[in-house]
Structure formats: structure tokens, C-alpha cells
Amino acid sequence: MVVTPDSVTLYLNGIPSTHRIKSDSLDFSSALLRIGQDRGWGATRNYSGEMDEICIFNRALSRDEIRGMMHLLRSETDTTVLAYYQANEPGGTAVYDVRNGNDGMINGRTERVLSSVPVGVGESTVLHSKQEQRYTALGATCVLAGNDIAQRVVAVTRLTTPPSPMPANSPRFSGHWWILRSWNDAQPAAASVLAPDTVYLTIGAIGKGDAQAPGNLVVFQRRANEYRPEWQECRAVATDTLRGIAAFALCVNDTLGQFVSATRGDSPLSADGDHSNADLRVYPNPVGDVLTVILPEDVIASPVGQAVELLSPLGQVLRRIPVTGAVMYLDMSNEPSGMYILRAGRRIARVVR
Image (spheres, rainbow, N blue to C red):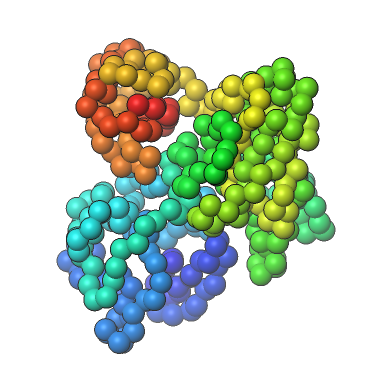
């Protein structure tokens, strides 16, 4: 929801609906804020539904920003965030603001449920067509057909955290999870049903066996908002071994959605070759007690106070370790087994303990 002095715009799956209405300013530092309750009706008119990843900004976000942020955890470097409630508390009535300490509490008949919404740590971009049908960003390409290309918008998100739940009985996965969405701003109601038959994904080095038998390479696909284990397996129909790209025939062909690449063959499935975070290196991985971290030059040369952060798969900061040099050694002996995210500046690496 975006509020300006003379309008309120609600977004549903990236599609806006604007209502012209005057809104009073709110002093967030002193006002009592109720989320999910109509101020004019009081306790008799409450929101009925689920909430997660609630973020309040001190400015009006643009349409492209909202579409690009839909599947991303909020960045800690965004100074326009006033409050961020991830609702990851294991129980109780407290709801913590993980950014600025504006903590709250749940009231009434509110209850907690397990969340597996498709969000994570990663990056995104929003593409506007210029009379072209091919959209490429962050290692993914889709080709959209139709006569309305000039009105089409595509958002590409690539996450470095694994989806939840993962596909059952699955082969070896890559380190990336893509979410692709498209809109037709001239016909918003029909925007979500137009999609290609084929998506091209950069999966990194392709093994000889997989190059000869592309069907060994698969993507698991489900719709963009899906959080249940309703993955469909789609096989590659062609490969480009020089660029590390595979073409996948979609099995849910009335939409774009979520994609996780995997192999039943011999490909390493490292998509880091085209990834901006490739120069943050960690080993051994999986790690035992000590993780060696080799930092890129721009992180080392950054201002004093730069730190390496160890994050949970949900993006929660577990530890901040000050940068001491180009090579660092992290003690992981007290960390439970599982997957972690290491962040240095804008660079990210997955770590398995």
C-alpha cells in the first residue's frame, strides 16, 4: 500500500488500484500504530487474512520498486525503512522490529502460522519492453509473444536462499532460485496469463553427459505466489555449453513463476559465472569448524567499519565480524548444522555447515 497526501494505492500481485482520498500525516515517532484495524471503525472492523514481512517506509515507493521488492528481504542499507516486522518469533505476543526497535505486540484472536512465502536474500530487476520480445536479466531469459509488447513489464528476481519446501524426490540442485513475473499495464487484469513456452536459465558449467543428453537438466516450476510443494518438473530441450545456458520447456505454460534448476547428470550447476557475487570466495564448503573467506578488493577498500555478516536462510543477521584483511577465518564450530548466507557488502555466498 502506498499513501500520498491525496491518494491511496493498493497493490495486489503487482497490479495497482488507486483511490483518491485525503490522508493526514502521521508522526511515526509518537503515534500508536495499529496494523490490520480500520481507524474509523475501531475493533469492529479488522483485517481477515495473513500478514508477513511487514515493512514501513518513510516515502512513497514507485510501481517498479514494489514489483522488484516483492520476493526480497529488505536490505539493511535502506535508510528509508522506518520499521520491519518479519514475524519470525517462535511464539508469544511480541512482534519485533528488526530494524529500528519499534516493537509491537499482537492482540485479539491473532495467531501464528508457519510461513513459507517465497521471499529470500538476493537481487532483482524490472525490465520495460522497447518493442522487443526477449527479456534477459540475472541469468534468466524469457520470450513473450503478443501484439502488446510495448506495454509489457517483466520482473526478474534471483534468490540465493533455497525455496521452502524443496521439491520432493529431487536431484542435485543449483545455488539459485528464480522468480519471474510479467504485467501488461495496458490490460492489468489479463497480465498474469501471458507467458512463454520456453525459459532460458544460466546454470553455469554444463557437464559433457548433460550436453549430450539435455533432458538430464531440469527445472522445477511452480506459480509465483505458490508456497506449497506443488512443483512441476520441466526438462531441458537444448544447451549452450559455451555460455552455460539451458533452454527449458515449461510445464506450467499459462504463467511464469518460480524456477529452481537441477541435474540428474554430471553438471556442476554453479551459476556464479555471471553473478556479481562471484568474487566472494569461501572454502571448504561444506565447512567443518573453520571457514576461510577471501574478500574482493572493493570490500577491503571500503570505509572503516565494514563487516562480514553471517545470516540465516531467512535473512536474519546471526553474527557481524569486522573486516580484518583480504583473508578471514570464521569459527563455525558453535553453529548448528544447516545452510547459512555470508554477506560482504553487496556480495553473497552460500555456506553449508
